[in-house]
Image (spheres, rainbow, N blue to C red):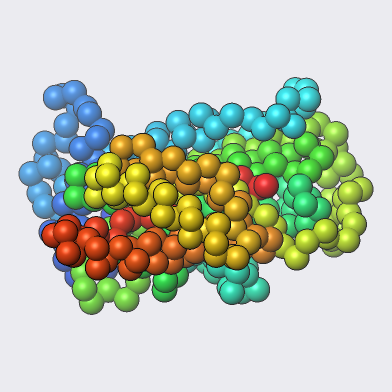
Length: 353
C-alpha cells in the first residue's frame, strides 16, 4: 500500500479501490455521487466525458467528494476555540495539514483494546501523519498521564467506527456524511492539537468483510517555541522526556465527550434526555453529565468519562443507557400505539478533561 497502512490516498487509488472491491457498484457510486453533489461547479467546469461513463463518473465524483470532505474538515477544525490555557502562548510554531482517502476497516479503540491500539492500522497512519506535521510524540495530560499523541487522536477521530457493540450504518439517505472533532492540549500549555475527521461509509455490498470509510482529516498543531527548541535539543534520545514527568494521579486518561442522539422527534428527544439523565446518575458507572440538552429531535449530551475509558467506550455506554431507557418504556409505548425506535448515537467532539 506504500507509505500508509490502511489508507488509499489519492483520487485514482481511492476510486479504484472502490471499483475493485465493492460488491454493489451502483450503490457505492450512488453514495459517492450524493456527497459529490455538495460540490457545486459552473457549467463549464463539468467533465461531460467523465459524467457520461459509469466508471469514469466514479473517479470524477470521488474527486469532488474528496473536496467536500477536505473543506468541511478544515472548517470544523479551525472553528474550534483555543482552550484558555493556550492564550499565554506567544507566537507559537503552527503547522497544519490534510489527509484524505479510503480508510479500510476503521476500528474504534475501547478500554478493552487499549493495549493493542498501536497494532491498529489507523493508529499507525495517524502516527506517521502527526510526525510529518511536527506534532509531539507524547504529551502530559491534565491528570498527569504521559500519553502517545497519535493514540489519543485515534481514540477520538475513530470513536464512531464499528466495535461490535456499535456497528450500525451511519449517516442517512439524504446526507451520509458524519463528522467528529477533538482538541488535545498538554498540561503545560506548550502544545495544542486540533483535529477534525469528516467521513461517510461507502457501501461495499453484503459480502464485503470490512467497513470502508471515505474520509478527510484536517489537523492543526501549535507548539511553543521553547518546546520546539527543547525537542530539537533532545532529538535522538530513545524516550520522551518531560520536566513534568511524575507518577500518574489516575489509572488512565480522562475524556470529556460530546455525543448526539438522534431521536425520532422532539417529544422523544425531550423524554429521552430526562430518562437517560436519571439512568446515568443512578448507574454507578463513574460517568458524569456536564450538559444534557434536547434541541429539536437531537439530544446533545456531554459526558465526563471515568479514567481509562475512551470516547468509543463513552459511545458504548450511552448506547446501553438508551437501550435501557427504551426497554423501560416499551410496554407503555406499545399500549399507547407508539414505540420509539433505537436512535443513532455518535461522538461529535472530544477534549481531555
